Image 1: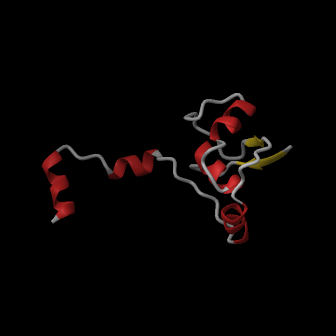
Image 2: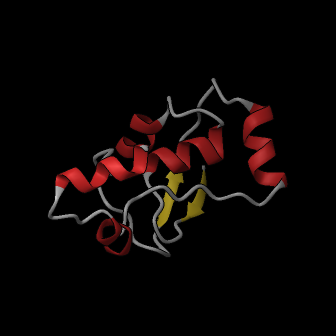
Amino acid sequence: MNSTPIIQGQTLFDIAIQEYGTPLPVLLIALENGLAVTDELEPGQTILLPDYDGKKVDIAGYYSKKSIWPSTALTDAIDDLFINDDPCDYCKCFT
């Protein structure tokens, strides 16, 4: 069984896309590692990668060849960008 280390901000969905080219095996990854699909992962943590027959080799290969490691989890720093006490102020984004 293969494994992969986690980088800052990665989720199990990111790992599924990175390693299998599809989000479909995210539940298998979670079960293999005793996690819930929404658990926060720690940088440096190692995730075991179960066998999955539906791997999209072209997509996973693209991520590998380009050294792309998806990292889509919101961090506190990113959350701070969206703090806004005046909800009408968001309308400025759409004008």
